Length: 53
Image 1 (cartoon, rainbow, N blue to C red):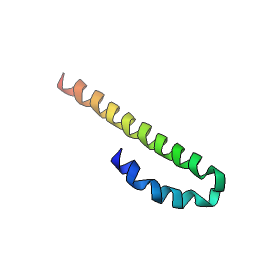
Image 2: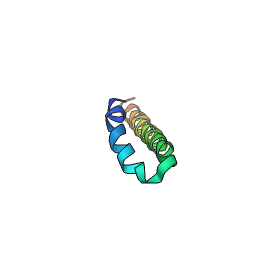
Image 3: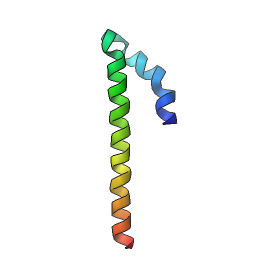
Image 4: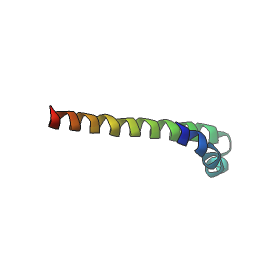
């Protein structure tokens, strides 16, 4: 979460050429990254608990 808060200015600069869609694009990128990270964490957790259980 801290990473996404620190990366907002960079994301806005990168998406600025999109005009009105820049805030939508930043929201999409943050949500996609959040879901991807939690998917990896959940997958790793299942993999680790299956091997030790």
